[in-house]
Length: 340
Ligand SMILES: Nc1ncnc2c1ncn2[C@@H]1O[C@H](COP(=O)(O)OP(=O)(O)OP(=O)(O)O)[C@@H](O)[C@H]1O
Ligand SMILES: [Mg+2]
Image (cartoon, rainbow, N blue to C red):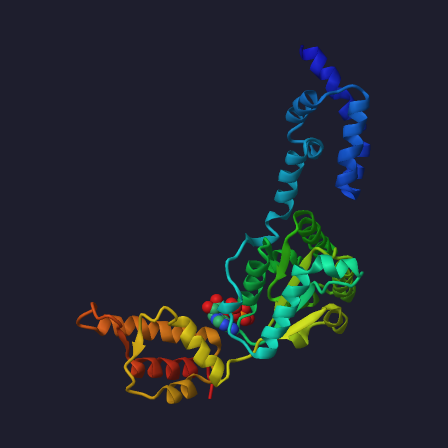
């Protein structure tokens, strides 16, 4: 028995230099090539598994059942992925200008009606750039898209992707794009401008060019069914050629008075709280102007909490938010962020 299984393993070892080389070039082809090779020599699945077990720690372990192969691929990309998520956010969770919402709705429509577009050989917009100041909903908008389309989203860990090793950043990016295409996921690259870090890491200016070229290529060959969303609060840092490649760029800016009002309604949407109206709403909104959605939401929630703690009787039907507390928190937040 021992002899038999050993003799079955030998052909694998005989192939190894060729296999190793092909594995680096194109893992998918290798998988088929070797499996076919073994089958033609009469080695069945069980024996192949047996040989795989015995060679667990050699690079040959990549060859085998698709599930095994998949596990290794995961290990390969795991550290490059910050999160893999599904979302139940929808458009109603995002407050923005009518124009940004319109753009977003049209973008989603393209993906909902992709069959119709491909029937008429029309290209589907699938490269989206979200830009604007911090805390204005770029990351949130990406979750909204994933939620609206009910698609899995891979959040890329740009910190891990950008490598000081020459050529490594490009390779990492390619790995992620391949994985997302295989799994039909949305790719979300947050803090996209930090790709500019390559410039600092490398003395070789060619490296930045290489990375940009890789992204251009990955974008150009992005399957129509895939989608890539990039977010930045430093659009100016992006290479012009890269900027041009996006099908759509949506700007998410600081909220104006109407959007602040909508945000307040959104935060208090369950109507559990009301304002005590010591300060007029108009005045409060003026105080909030200049701050991001994130800061306004944060200060309002803090005001709600403080008002609750200050209440003698928390059984009231609708606890009142102490508007003065919120106003003070807004002023403090502006001071902390050095906003006029
Ligand atoms: N436009 C918005 N509508 C509703 N809520 C928002 C909006 N923008 C921000 N928020 C709230 O603030 C939180 C943080 O926002 P988000 O992470 O999307 O900002 P960002 O633009 O990605 O900021 P950064 O550039 O710092 O990454 C959100 O989870 C949400 O609770
Ligand atoms: Mg963000």
